[in-house]
Amino acid sequence: EKKRLEEAAAEAKRLKEEEEKKAATKARMVAAKARAESKRLEAKAKAEAEAKAEEKTAAEAAEKKRIEEEKTAAEAAENKREEEEKSAAEAAEKKRQEEEKAAAEAAEKKRQEEEAKAATEATRLEEEAEKKRLEEAAAEAKRLKEEEEKKAATKARMVAAKARAESKRLEAKAKAEAEAKAEEKTAAEAAEKKRI
Picture: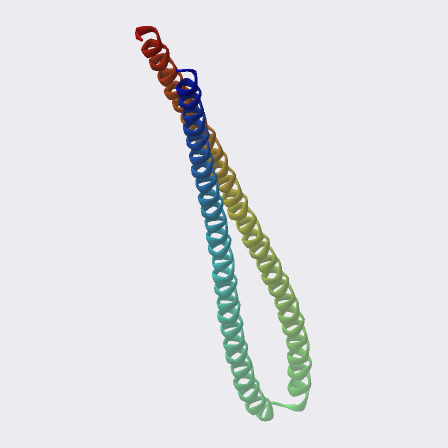
């Protein structure tokens, strides 16, 4: 009877250890799966943030190109208009007297210098504004990228924490079940021994 009880106790211990081993294996698998999912989500978020940044940069470049093309076309039209006006003024100037011609040439020269000065200043201001806008857009793109990466990292940590909690819960449940089975078997053996 003693030998049989010892064998039963050994069997109960073996079953308990086997259940604990299964629970630990399952917990490790859950944790590994959670880590893999966390890495996948982080990589996905990073790729999306980079794609958004690249898309915004491309849009900014296209906008800059469009503005430059419009500016070039406007300058060409302005140059053509000035040339036409100049030609007409010169043709009319030839018909006037020499004194009127000298006065008109002086006035024309002064006007052209002022227009050139104003055009140069306008161009400088326009270029400064464009540079500032592009810098602000680049800073915004960088901020959005960092924000997306931060969100992905936070989500990955939450997933990992949840997986660890689930792993501990499963391990504790398996251990409790194994102990309950062992106690139940021991009680049954004691009752059988008492009956005999």
